[in-house]
Length: 413
Image (tube, rainbow, N blue to C red; front, side, top):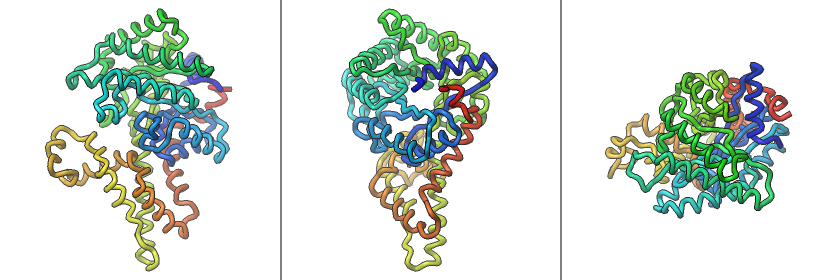
């Protein structure tokens, strides 16, 4: 199968001919999202990337319950189900020390977390991942908000790539593609001078260690969007494109969720974009629509007992404590000793919506979802298909904006 690196080279060549394409990377944070992305890839004959973090998919199952092998197996199963012949690429997102929440909670040392990340890189390679995002820009041993020195980011990036390449060769696997950098400030890479220093340092290090062939096809850059901002900055994107294109790389944007101007991505040379939480919100909205249908059904039929899905979901999010990850400093103080209910309703709603992806696979949530679907099974042929279709329509908006309709023949043919 055509590698992602080869696809990036074709995107660069197509730009010279006036064709502008951005690849979409869907974060597979639930089975419904994974299926919807496969449906969209099949319907549009377009390559699809699946950017899975170590929190989502890892050797311990992550919060989705999938190991890397299980993710690939499920992706393959869904491709057969929907007749998808377009290439599908499982990818690692943010593979680096302390970027798995469990490593931070366990207080792992640098050596310990690097050992864990290396083991996960090996597992991703063995499962058949097509892209590894190497991101050692976080250092929990430093004071809060103090960025890691650029030279240290280069050292750790090169160390992880060297490990992955050695493991790939040991297992006799074909070349894999790499992504480096971050949109966050942890590594100090947001500043253009530091961004350039990182690229130059990494290039020199890979060249000197015989790893020039592993030069990353994607460089992650800050392009205006973050968790709370949806305005993509075309000017910054063009500057970054001009910096990385001569290196035969393209810029990849994270936090593309709900972006206000997605059509500007291909127009400014963006090579790829990750979308994740937005599809969780769409999944939840579809489920809430089903809950409303269930309420109306229960009001007219004495034999229907409400599933309690929404209450089960909220309880699971609160119990998980994942919602605390997104609190502002003021909210953290407000909820200390008082808990989730101290927050205003709108903020509770946002946190439940954002945190839903962490608890979809909790037994209580799965059971309530099963009851919801069973209650509606006499009213609609496929309740889960209703949810998948809603997410697929959301994904379609990005496919259209990124010029991905019928892109497979151009990029992999």
